Length: 249
Image (tube, rainbow, N blue to C red; front, side, top):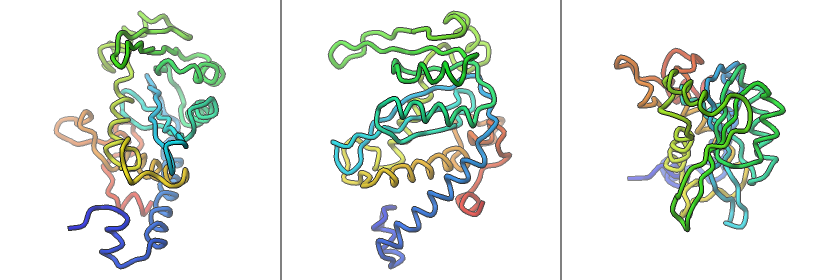
């Protein structure tokens, strides 16, 4: 029995390392093009932002996966692989600007890097931060910090009225972070399978984004017994894709 590693695939198909990684690189580039072609003109009620820590080659080269998810459809709208700095936040928000037609609420953690870029590109949107305060390693409290737009109380009520949740939180993007970690050893905290190149980590994320949005049904989106993907919920497609369909697009 072989696991789904690059080495295992190579032993099954008797292919060299270069051939195997070439397959993966080609699939990742193809999925990047699919994501760019499919994800556009998104009308979102609420976009949640968060960052997922990782590293490349060694833990001295910290890289973060910056995620933006639509809270209602669970669509992974955009991601960026970057160090934890203003450049990562700027690139993520600029990508959102290209893909989002309208949005009224942004929710994130207390990272200040987002503030000026959201104000610049989404002047009419409301932006609220969830700032976590710790005592030692334990979460002591969560502060809701108003940055721009509607008051917090109004945003809370609108979230409840639209069925997005019980109130302001970043739970959906945090759950996405966990799904990403569970989907690849490259994102696990303790692993021998870490990415050796930033391009390979970005390539995995392109593959994951296409798979998550169009191939993998989301349990919370099932409707009248019909399984749906985030892409279906966002009306980007009308059916669950297969891997063959994705790679043949």
